[in-house]
Length: 93
Image (cartoon, rainbow, N blue to C red; front, side, top):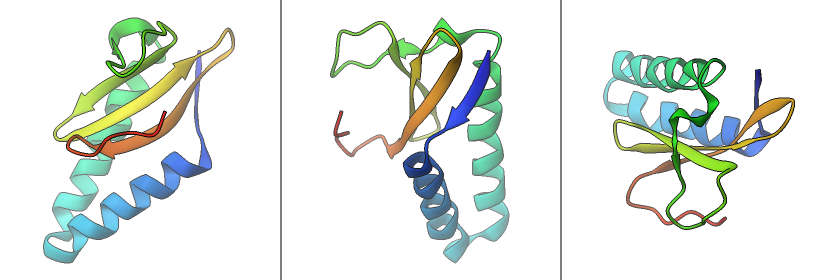
């Protein structure tokens, strides 16, 4: 199954990288790599993430990477990453 990032999720990842890089550029790169590795894992195990607690839809799931929530939707043909949030923020689903 293919993974596709929505533009909004890519922008959120850029913001995360920029924010972390202000204090530690290496840590920023490492965090983005960790998020991408978690997402890559979904290609083989799309249902390994938990159902997003704010919804009961089994097709809407998330993986937690450090203090970030990587939210995705499973369809017949792809996994769509639609949000990457800091854990303390409430998502707008």
